[in-house]
Amino acid sequence: MAVNKIPKAWRLLVVFSCDMAAVMIAWALAYLVRFNGAVPSEFMLSGATAGLATLPICAVVFYRLGLYRGIWVFASLPDLARIVRAVTIAALIVTAVCTLLGLSPAVPRATLILHPIFLLLWMGGSRMAYRVWKEHVHYGDLRAKGQPVLVVGAGRAAAYLVAELNRSAEWRVVGLLDDDPGKIGREVVGHKVLGPIDALPAWSERLRARNAIIAMPSAPNETRQRVATACVQCGVHAMTLPAIEDVVRGGSSRSFRDIDLHDLIGRDPVRIDSPEVERLLKGRVIMVTGAGGSIGSELCRQIMRFEPCQLMLVDISEFALYTISEELRESFPKVEIVAFAGDVRDQLWIESIFRQYSPSMVFHAAAYKHVPLMEERNAWQAIRNNVLGTYRLASVAVANRVERFVLVSTDKAVNPTNVMGASKRMAEMVCQVLQQSAEMTRFEIVRFGNVMGSAGSVIPKFHSQISKGGPVTVTHPEVTRYFMSIPEAAQLVLQAAAMGEHGDVFVMDMGDPIRIADLARHLIRLSGFSEEQIGMVFTGLRPGEKLYEELLADQEETRETHHPKLRIAKARVVSKQWLEDVLVWMGQRAIPGDDEVRRDLRRWVPEYEPAVRTPLSVVHRPAQDRSVG
Image (cartoon, rainbow, N blue to C red; front, side):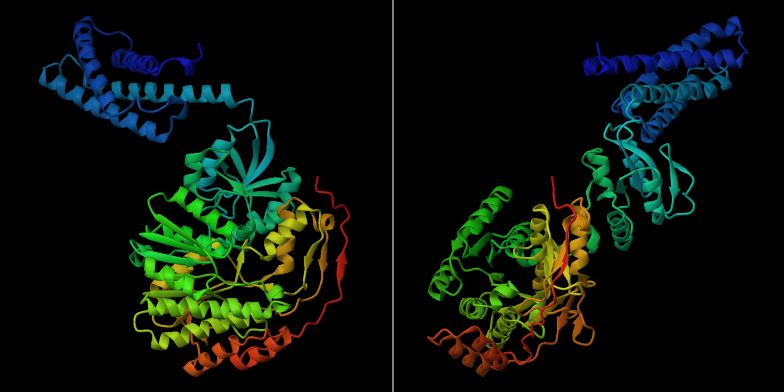
């Protein structure tokens, strides 16, 4: 019968019996050593009596200290420490009992010292020997198989990982890399630290290791980003170890994942003031417009973590609304979800919702946001949706004495060069004007840049093009953008909402700008192809696009907050007359053309300057092999 098929109770009985036998054998051995192999007859009876008295003492101590909760095949330093503690306590009790019973003259003091030493060697050694044998039987023949992999990092997380990989039939560790000079040349769980991280390309080529696992969860974000980029650039399939806890919990198949674009961009994790946000949201009725969109849906997920009383979802897309409402009901069954399908420009409908449900806070994320699409043939709809929709929703919120109204805006509202950006700047100005007369409602505006993976963004487009074999289309070789993740954006919106005063305009620290062409190259390599296989085409800037986005966190134009990733912009004052004139303009019965809209926008947004399209001569980099099979 296989060992692992023996009932647990029987296995524990076998282990317990072996330990009790070890107690007696160690006791006899201690006597033999003390008397050089010839125990005098006068000591034999007293020694046997003392030995029998030692047996129940050790049995009780060993059981009470949990020596039989561990699994021998996973015996480790904590198990050894538990054995040392149990044997030491048992030895002290035995010594005390021998003294109290007057057995001290018959039991030599050397025996009382030697016995725990022999017992400890026996118990600890037997467990370690069993583990070594078990690993050899189960895993010994696997270590020469599997794909060769380099482990980047030689700390505690790497040690856990290498120990798990040693048991894997899928991977074979060929070495480790670490920048610590004191670790280079030494071994981690039987594998040598070959050299510094910068030597990754050379070692991967020399050892023919086309896989690497980054095992540095506590390293600075810049270091992890540098390693991920180096792996991608030299064609090594890179994986990463997110946290030590994942290694301890998960095992080799679940403790690491493929690196993605977030790892290459290297954004630091966001830490929000949870108690401050919880005070804002817990037990409240919250409304989110655009709830089915990329930002709106993530806002809903983040809000639900703080247990609102009720969450109102508003979206014009029936399918998007259904999808997010079902997801939230399944994930957060204790919070009431109320879904509304409709247009925020429908003021009568919005008023009826507010009267019935009385939200205390509104997150307004509903907007048209695609720059080229809104620039041609849809300019007036962008204004109507983004400006008029914001005005009607915000006006109803003020009339119903909503506590906070948070407008989700964009960096493209800063010195806008396109209709979408100008419309979002006008939406900001609408909120600023309404704030002037709002007695109860506190308006807050949050701007951020491009969000990785959001609907209509460049990254899903690149993924689609790569999956079809290319080419990947990029507007210009030098175009740059700021990027952040969807969860990061949503968390910072909540943090800003908790911090804001009347009419504050928050801007987020977007880090360093990233060249879109580099982004495309990263995605191509992450997909397992070279640029020559997929190809890249530069098509020229589209209508309304900037070559460079402006830096949001400009020290001269913003002031600090207590959160390192949020600053407050110094927005100029807007008059009530401005809003009245804009409403008259938007209320015209005729539908103006795109050029007319752009002309009038200069009146309403003085900083708006339409971009002049300068087409780039299309540069083709033909793919040598576009097959993705």
